[in-house]
Length: 183
Image (cartoon, rainbow, N blue to C red; front, side, top):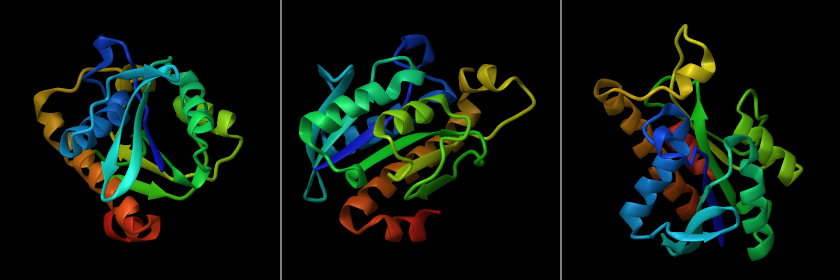
């Protein structure tokens, strides 16, 4: 069983922002694989199903971003999911819009949601997919929480689609194959 966690902000006013890439990728995965993310538990919303013959849980933490690890660890412990079977998806300002980066491990850098995940898991060694949102000269907080306009949405959607396909590749083959194909 795999736990696929998308990081985002649960408040409606943040639904079309750069900081919600994790939620957006889970929405794409959910739609394609007909897995409803509507059950409430683990301080989050989740759905269960199968993707390429692998049992999966899709989880959207409903905590503040900087407490995302609470939701993840509750689901991990309840289902006894090994850390290597957890995939965390989130936005990254250091990656160009429309691009993704897959890694087997790494630091949280400045991402508060990932800092929480690392804290609660007690390790940096777990798969992650970073969805590029680029950056500009604005304050970082203002930038990631800003609404995405329709022109940028086209490029953002490219990254979301690649990330969703990368999850399928990890489940079908392995993370190395996904890294070779999508990085």
